[in-house]
Amino acid sequence: MFGFSKVKRLKSFAGQNVMKLGNGSVISCMLIFLCIFFLLKARFCPASTGTRCLFKHVRPMFGIINTRSLGSRTAMVQNESSSHLISDEAREQPICDISGKRSDTCDVVADIRVVTHGRNSTANSTTVTISGSFNSQRRAEEWRIRPYARKGDVTAMNHVTEILLQTDPRNPPRCTRNHTVPALIFSTAGYTGNFFHDFTDVLVPLFITSHRFHGEVQFLVTDMKPLWISKFQLILRQLSRYQVIDVNHGEDGVHCFRRAIIGTIFHQELGVNPLKFPTGSSILGFKQLLRRAFSLERETVTPVVGGNTTASRPPRLLIISRKRSRAFMNVREIVDLAKSLGFEVVVAEANLSTDVGKFARLVNSCDVMLGVHGAGLTNMIFLPHGAVLIQLIPFGRLEWVARSSFKDPAVKMKVRYLEYSLREDETSLSEQYPRDDPVLKHPLQIHKQGWSMVRSVYLVKQNVKPHLGRLRSKLLESLELLKSPQESI
Image 1 (cartoon, one colour):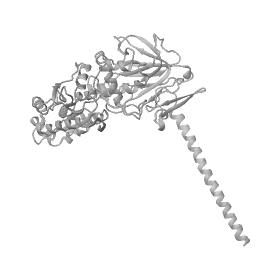
Image 2 (cartoon, rainbow, N blue to C red):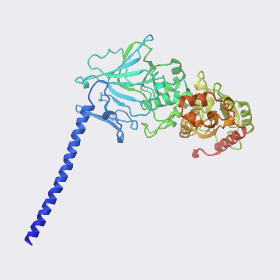
Image 3 (cartoon, rainbow, N blue to C red):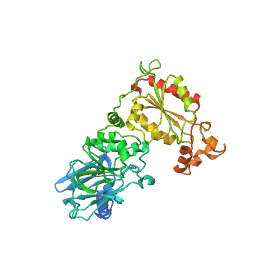
Image 4 (cartoon, helix red, strand yellow):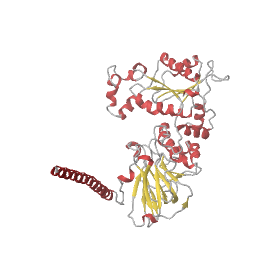
């Protein structure tokens, strides 16, 4: 019996030792892993020129991009979901967020010097220099940003001037002008000049990025198009109280700031993600800004009662016309049809020379807007809440691009949305191609050849002739929607 008890105690003792040994192994493995982690961090995140550190740029959870100690102070940087990109103005090292699918942005508080060039300059890049005691013992670092929200689109980005953001504590250029407000640098290259891209690539991202400053921000523009700035100056004035500075072809000089943001923040096509917006706002906040900029009278439509929106006039329909492509081949018949249903009809085209404010007020006066998929439908952003957008989708299986460009944004703008997909016998393509051609019978085969082919065939070459019977049902549906209360939007 004594022998059995001794054996039992020995087994228990051995089991405890095995357990202790197992716990020790786990702890040892964790220590080894941490050592490897810090070795890798030291290896792949050196303070060297042009280095992009994986640990520096990954967007983690809970909104924090990076936390850095500056002596006795700590600088915490937050992403777009916070109220500010910077919560401690003592931070002098830039935070460059390259995780976005459509835009890169750098945000820095330091002694910042932006070199601008005169009209005869041939420089193909712009230099932003960061100076400060924080990096006096470091080698120079640099970041390269193209400040236009269409990252990944080679065609667009090839025309965007590169911003070289670099640290240089030894020989900073001498200031010729000092500013007391932050700088925001963006480009008007890319696809600007197309009304859709003007808003989705530049103006809405600019609103997202600058709105928090309540006008106290200085815009610096690369690749500046004076006509573009003039066209949208009323919107720009809502976002900045200061005259825009032309970086590439203005005046030779060095503009000095204590804070600069390079690039704008993109959320979605013609949209603002409230969860990422500093104040929790949405695209409705941008629409409100547009109403102020262009003195738009109507915030919401007046519900239709007995066929009329008000005692003074019937519901107004705006037909967006086009001349070069996707033009209506039966616009006169469409106008007559709409009038027979009780609409007051306006036909108008928005082109490059259009006065934006004047056209915005026209759109705002209407209750229904009808047009073929294209940049002109971007004007829906001026419609009052509760208005109706009818998008005619060209033949060629283009529902996906039509819906992402206008359907999804319209709903978030409190604009009711209807769509009309054109059939083979409603397109001019049926007269240009044999009946058994893949363009007509197998559009997806054309899609497989790439977007440039799709655009060439189904957008550039196509005009439309919608059936009046089918279109009549959509117009009647829009009238019914105008009768429903605003709360249903």
